[in-house]
Length: 183
Image (cartoon, rainbow, N blue to C red):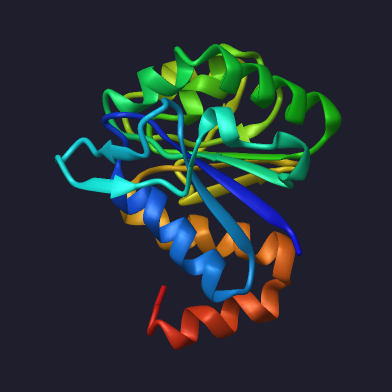
């Protein structure tokens, strides 16, 4: 079974993180919410406290098939400041393994040179951080093994694309119908 790690930093956007967790779990994927600190309880940018499944020091990156970075502020900055996580983002990218980011978090990929020559999108106002990308206003952009999305309003689209990567488009569409999602 494919395994996805969703990384939570203080100030993350809760809808972006939890929508991916929910949709992917409904599709039967193994999803871990991972706190980037040694505290499992992580507060979102709107002071919603969520208990992560594990802490970064407990994460076995060798078991993950995808890393997901939710946006939000200051969550995005806190993710980018986490050296161990950034090493893994770089390693996953170099190995051709899936990485995904939504809202402000695609800026992290831009800063790391990951978006050069790729279609990418982000929260409005962060486009200048998508260094080297062909910036779009699409809800989700998939460029090989790099997935980006625009924000809370595109979280379901983002989650369904991620689920579709591992479960297939048909299963993702069945899940969309089951949660009464309409484009």
